[in-house]
Length: 170
View: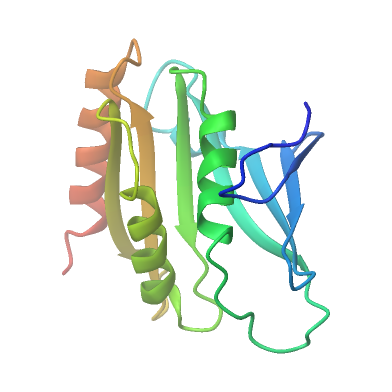
């Protein structure tokens, strides 16, 4: 796939592979990989049919600054463009789990949500949930699907039931 040509985002490349990797580099030479890792197994115990699901991972592949990455106004639209490039198939389901390794999962969830709602088509549905990992970590998760998905009713019911199951003890 050729690079993105928009002036409002960085050029990116499709590297493909098992994890469906896209990559781009910012003006500060920060290298990002946006991965869509096959994750249908997450639905295996809950739904009879195969779900075309992918976990979206936003990863810093290279940070030559060696410190916190500065805000960059082109990162958000680049990630959004990559998301929609991959999410062309209305039967796909995207899962986004906010990294909790440094306790900043709530900030990541707010950032992702602000990016997501920045310019979302009306047929894209986003469901958020939270649950404990069994220890003390709070896991924040978003599930995104196309309202035109042939199994949307079944998936929405499943997501709502999962939310209720995960949050029984709260």
